[in-house]
Length: 487
Image 1 (spheres, rainbow, N blue to C red):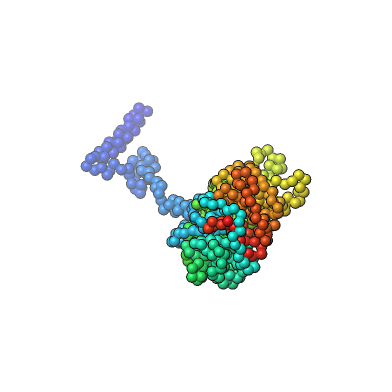
Image 2 (cartoon, helix red, strand yellow):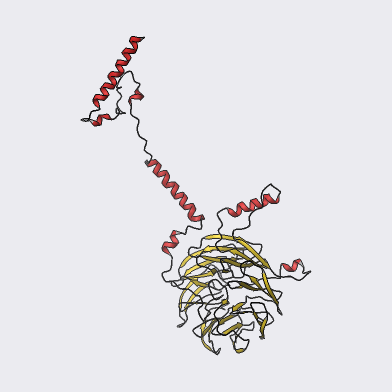
């Protein structure tokens, strides 16, 4: 046994000796293991696998690279179509307007519905608050629901088959621009151009000075809501449920968003978001530059009044009540379906915690119904028009003739005022006055700090078009088609 061990030791010594001799500085390449393709074993005492140097596995191979590329493309596509933080690159790179302007009112002007992009209806800087004195009245033909806009001492008013231009100080008509149908929506004025929609599905841009039509965009359906211009884009909703964003200079489509119900009011726009009220019982929060959905707040009834965005909240009316939602709310893909299933299981008594509310849900405000008011009537009576909003309070009316002041952050009622008749349109805030009209033709001015009546003025017909304040006077349109100026 000892002799066998000696023989084996000599053979191993010879193998290692030959290796050491080959691994000389003069021949460093021979330090490498034997070539894996060499079928001849180095020594018969070692198995073949022990004489072959292992190959290094390449992590970055053609196959792995292809798999990684396909995975990246799929992930990017899913993010593109579902995740609201990632804007559509096709839209961003190819369709954004070169000229940037908007229809926001400034100084003594009122150049769009709701006064500004947020639709707040608030004039903060007022030298002389109106005192309720009728200055002039002008007949403008059959009534439409278009409120006037004012710029450079001139009033532009959508009327029956025309746009009427009046002198703001006298009410005298100075121009008439013919149209192919009645204009029932407030115009928007931006960069010297009037923007409006027509019943024949056209969105029109018209030079305010020369009266020349600059371009027309054919929408998929008629519209019954005003338009707004922000960052060189015109926003308009239509009765087919589509909100259109159109280049205000060229008339080319930038994007469109489809809902399942009619869009009857203008979008409310903040720095990055567009809020759209739809008759499919939902408020949509969209990316204003791409139209991608960030959130959808679902309610139990159709939305018709314009939303308002202020104080980092979005205010909107549905189910005869006022809702407040966080303006930056975000709904992730599939979140609603998960919450709905969760809610159903919870109602069935499964041992689950109470389901969360919708993303961004803050509070709700309802009318103060009299004692014993029938539940059936609560479904038809209440709040139907949008509020006027300041930094600390909002003001909103209902069909019972009450105007409410509500804390804009918490939704707590501050005061209420009982008027003579139904309130169908939004109030406005002028300095320290909350001003609104009712269907009996009364125009009221209330102290917005405590609701005390400052004055009231009886006009010849009901008021279903919200007042505006510009050039130092209130302008109110009544159901008989007349336009009235009050100082």
